Image (cartoon, rainbow, N blue to C red; front, side, top):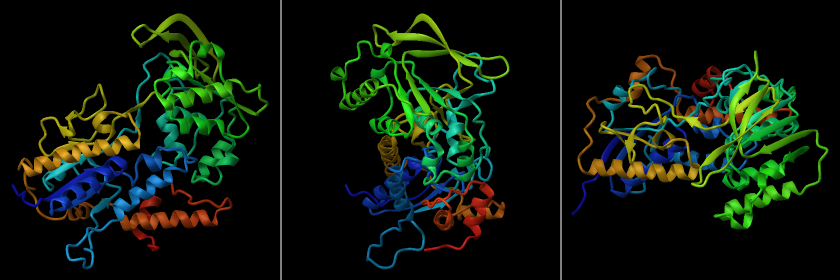
Length: 466
């Protein structure tokens, strides 16, 4: 049976990897069916790439390759059947500085598109429900990451007056936070870290960073690359404790990745005591029960843990206090709600089945807002494939209603005076940041523009450099 060519108009909310992958996969799927698709990608920030731009430490140079791949997806024009000139409209149209619930409503999107895909991710810190968590000096890791990445909606300064700090968590975000806190700012000068952040780090009083994990070394959630980077930080000693490694044998690790990491940790244990000016302490089998202090953070109380018979972690009844002056909570992220869409408060996700939002035909979800903040970027791509497969199946089965309203959504934005940004605007901002990097006293690939209003001004009024 021959399938009729599809002709779709689809909106995607969120221009991070999840949204971009979804758009690219949808364009490929429709093209494979000799159909046509118009995709509008909405982003609340003026620039694309989401957590790749604002959630990854600036010294992760390998991320540049991912940005290049995402750039190609957004910069592509649809192919023509006769090989003639490409159409003026790109396959995916980027519309930045547009927030759903402020500049547009979800109902306005749904009335103008066959389908809407929500890819808003998770940018808030998950809660750590222990006493003292709201004391001054207790910070969410997501907020700190947003600060050192130059997110336009966070404060330009950060209090770095503590000599000893605790980072609670055993994932890659915890390591990013610990590494940036321990690293000497001079070693960040050639990255895209904003100047305001560099100045703040140069004035930092930090000498000791303690990373606490609830489980043991055999259950760490790092990746080998993240762990290796930690050991390459200059003038920082890594301190481990033999009691945390009782019964841990790298040879019995279930995966090669874990074997590599356990061997790395054991190699650090065998190092002689160092004389570096800063120290990074890795603690395992520590579950936080209270952040201590009267008017501000003075320490953290932990219960020592051990592995239970069923593989869970159980408390031992032994409590230890660690004196620190600041705490960074890196215990996970929480999904970003979309005004007008259903939301599961307990899980921090949009309720869905395979990407189809529950009881909302034509509405889909992908990425962390679909499945929770777990997995790496590669998982995001395979996750988007599931959502797009189901969307295309719904379109082919006639389950997607035709748009009720004709016309370009841009006309609605302009009528309301929204200062939206475009892909050409991003190229102008990108070129502007690269020029700033070329002329900076520390020559770097780019100097990131931080204020939202400046990003919008350059994007809307800047001279596009091709």
